[in-house]
Image 1 (spheres, rainbow, N blue to C red):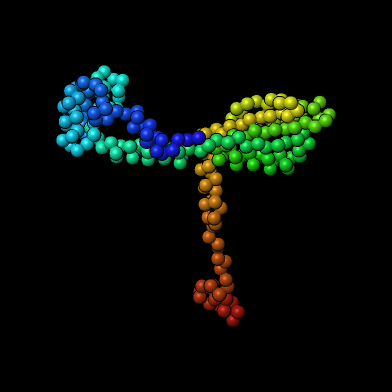
Image 2 (cartoon, rainbow, N blue to C red):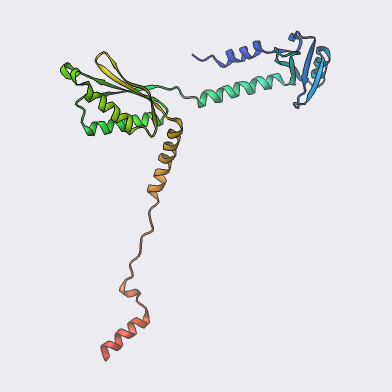
Amino acid sequence: MLPSTSERSAAIRDRLRINNRIRAREVRLIDENGAQVGVVSIRDALGMAEERGLDLVEVAPNAIPPVCRILDYGKFRYEQSKKEREARKNQKQVEIKQIRLEPKTDDHDLDVKARQARRFLIDGDKVKFNLRFRGREIFHQDIGLRMLEQMAEELRDIAIVEQRPLMEGRVLTLLLAPNQKAKAQAQRERQQQPARSTAQPAPQVAESPSDAAPDDQADEEDDIHA
């Protein structure tokens, strides 16, 4: 479970010493514009921060001497929380999607399963094929192995084999993971496909007899009276 915003803010506050909580006698100071001031006493650093109406924040406590910056600590905490929210929003929880197969699954159903797996992989999820053997089917594991190898081959343009076919009891499994570069290319092609399908060529207008040039009509009349 991810920590709440208040918990993360408290963690930032506890991790960074500010103002009078800084224990070092000397610090390497960076001003509010990012310029290096140099090594100064903690008293002088606190005085400079106070003159500007800002805070003195110890950003590198393990350095010798510790590095401190003059900044607006409230704004700094807000920006940190904002970055964390954006990172959480852009982060997708990877799931393992399960797809069931049987040794007697026909070609049509295999195509359906492959398309389903392709959608999952493009969305960023992993896919685990579970091929269950029932009864005497367990003596024909080669059929299931060929079936899973066929799936891996059909999806190799967007997936990598994370775990090769493996027997788990009476179930033969195959785990595929998204190939990030190939997945991005497939997403671009999928987004461009509707645009290509809607772009229809302009219809060609057939020339009707009434559109014939006047000179052609005159020639036809001369032929009739000749």
